[in-house]
Amino acid sequence: MLGWRGVRDADVLGVWSPNAKNAAAAARYANELDVGAAKVYTSISDMVADPAIDAIWLTGPNQARIENVQEIVDALERGRGTLKGIACEKPLARNVAEAKEILRMVKKAGIMHGYLEDQAFVPQVERGRALIWARGAATTGRPYLARAAEEHSGPHTPWFWQGALQGGGVLNDMMCHSALVVRQLLTKPGQSLTTVTPKRITAHIASLKWTRPEYARKLAKAHRGVDYTKAASEDFASMHVEFETNDGYTVIGEATTSWSFVGAGLRLSTELLGPEYSMEWNSLDAGLKLFFSREVKGRAGEDLVEKQNAEVGQMPVVADEAVAYGYEAEDRHFVRCFLGKEEPLLTFDDGLDVVKMLMTAYKSAEEGRTIDFPPRGLDKFVPAVARGAWKPPKQGR
Image (cartoon, rainbow, N blue to C red):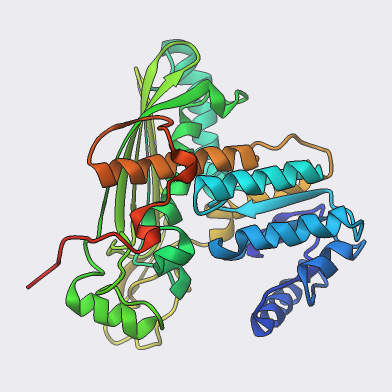
């Protein structure tokens, strides 16, 4: 919602949540931000039926994605309302079968769709990519290596930690960002992501921190229903992707994600390298830093940076996270798409491609080998983490 302060052509007019308290708080927040006269709806169907609502942003938990899309589509098919578009938060679904079903339903209903991948819209990444391709690649050849990482100390909400609900661990939760970003960086601006095709994927997952006995106890205390001594999800994942370009090159994408990162807070980073050039970005190199001595007392919070881990010492400040992480730009883009002013840069088709890459990565990690993309049987594959069958090595004695 903070991102909507920089969107001129739309207002946030409504909120629905199965938790009425959360819905009321979200609507109140939208009104406080002055991004729209938002009200609470009693159902998704009622929201679709309201002629004031032109588009819906799906930002609910992964396990509710199918039923939420089904309710939207059913309302449209019964003639209860019309929509210009639907935008969906990452990942599109928990596995390939669910992602395909979501895409099928939305296409059948004839709704324009957009895949909400905020990191693809990070201003520094967008600008750096444009300059690299316009100057470096145009004169010395296309880039050949892209790296992306997202790292923090772990999610705030219990369902993220539960593989059966979320669809996995950090690989499913955050590698969806990095997998798309490396492919995007390696793709010439203006061209489709399909011009850079995944061919082979190698991945590793591990539980480095949260299955250690002392941290498993902390996790269980902080989040009801989460017990990593019995059902753990990975808190670290890495992925190596070999891509083939439409002009005959092999290029590489490397991605790392972590819920076991110790630092100032959320850290996003990207790199792009070519024959005679490179670019890099790190969200914690924000330019503004504050220092507080031990004498400065205060409660824990996240007023400096998302997932903030300390309140004393020298710390970076991300002054406007909604802009820095790409939320404002993605919201503005998809609003303009649904108004017919732009073509979507990312659709549910791209979201499906990401899920296919993630599931191949899980398959690679489980089998301990490089997997040709796409492997057979991917439509039926559900990661061991999501089935509650993953057994990480024990941490500690």
